[in-house]
Length: 97
Length: 199
Image (cartoon, rainbow over all chains, first blue to last red; front, side, top):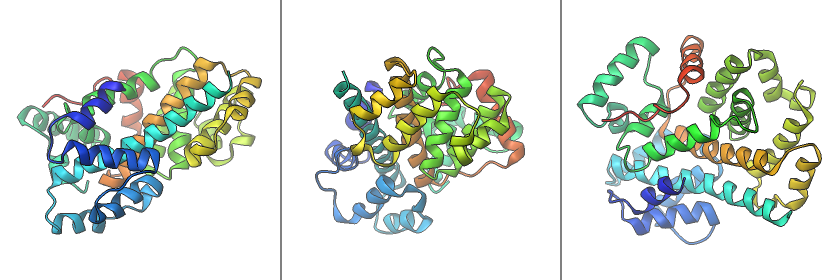
């Protein structure tokens, strides 16, 4: 898991590493900010992923974002949601020692 | 699939493999293309996480781990992951009716109290992660869940919550009943080791 997250947040890509980290932390910690034009998709992936629509991605494409950019954004947000639960679970176990 | 680049694959080798998969499975599963596209970026490593989470049958059987993945996917309302893992769980356990009853009304499902308790824990962890606390851990332990069993279940929750969101955001094509049977056979026979294909 460490390798997956380290690569996702640190490997060269279409998006900058600071944006990927911001998106990941926004979903993982519910803290920090992401650029306004990306916020709607990131929040949907965090809280109601089933509601993401074709239009959400078309909207970003039309705003000039490449498919690689969107792909990286989706991965960072999705992994942030998974990590949020992973860490909460381990914290609860730690507290029950 | 909403991103053409992911659907198409990263290189000639990957595209050739996709052609074979389309012929024998019916379509390229979204979980394969999403973890194969630019696989060194995330997919290759994440596929290893899926294999570790769902194919380390130390504390749980493979069937139970697949039930956990389907249960978390159902809570996340991810139809792709829900139906796929339910089909794999049915094949692995040989008890499709039990899998369906866990997803429809788990209190009435004929599963162990240990698994029931861990599903209670995971429901809270998936839907309201910040509300999970030591009392929830103790409740699961009281029903026989060891710390290793809980850790494994939390790991499955991580991969299911992550993949479910990738599936919904990228718009994975839903498999029909015929293709689901093929998914189930492949995942019970080979696991997820080859989910991410070299390009």
